[in-house]
Image (cartoon, rainbow, N blue to C red; front, side):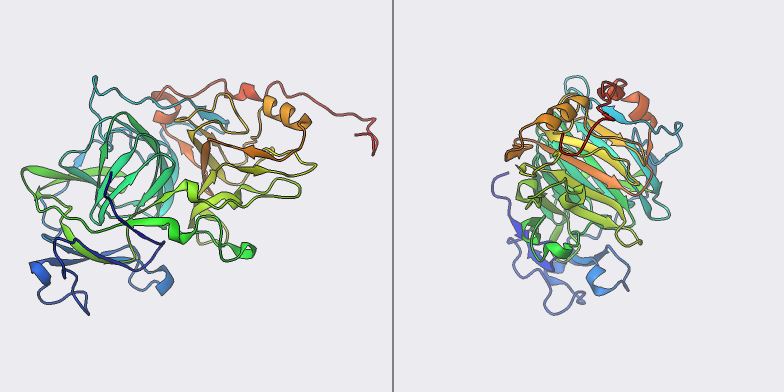
Length: 443
């Protein structure tokens, strides 16, 4: 959307006021007896008050009416959104989904919330420890309704169609090859402009942060300056017919009514905000001598667990880059892992599986389930001339990687009818190249 403005930085202390109301931020204090313009002061805390300062997240919102003014919440149907990880028996197989179907607007109007489908996940929102992986498939904008997730943070990855997200902090336009994070407790509404699809990583009990760089140094990967936060924008709008706030709480959906827009924040300041990031700005680190570096070098954001170096979830991308390694099988290696790996494809072809893994589809390789290049990729790259080449040009694959052993939902295994039951066959033609008579120097 032309004209949208943003502020730059990751986790900064921001302050913003709608230019229609200059001076709406109180000076020198957070909670004056009477706020400028007769606004209500409301704090939104994303961490415990006593968290160490580097981890302390909060923002002060100055709004026309406080968010507490609403009718009681009542339970509403969850559709295909779930936190029931025991709907079906566990399945350790390599799983792959064809592109998830987007409903046609001519057949049924589906907005962002109605179009949420849980594919897999683990853990528990009540104990604040776990994750959910969802897809959204929708065709119409949210009208006089917003969504508020009390359970955790949403990392949203658009795959088809741009989305205009209105939040209490302002507006963000998020296009495919960009991501955005809506943190716990923030109200937002989604406008779409046609058939729209994407992926969501939900994290309970932790917030996303930039990974530590260690020996890489001070710069690289996703740089803080490339994250964008919206600027204050408000609407003073009465909705006599009722505005619906949908709340995700303990894995269930609830709705309440109020007679005004929740996007009535005239000014705000703090470090707890929604934000977006363009994946093209990722500064790729890669091997320039030999061997294939571990995919952790492609981590954009991480949600840390209490165990050092072990993530509740990492968001990892595989962007366009140069491959130059000598004496090396360059694509991803065959692998068994103590993490769960859910992959999606925004555009193009994934280097290790150029057929079958399609934009808008997905795959899941569960804990200790072997996976790796298909037979065509292995044979081609075992004999390829090793000259510098562009890898993944025009593509963008990503991975939600988690230390949780994720369960697949009934919707993911059956209802969506997109599970590729022939996936295992891409490895069936692999054959033995073992030569017991091999001698050094004869390779």
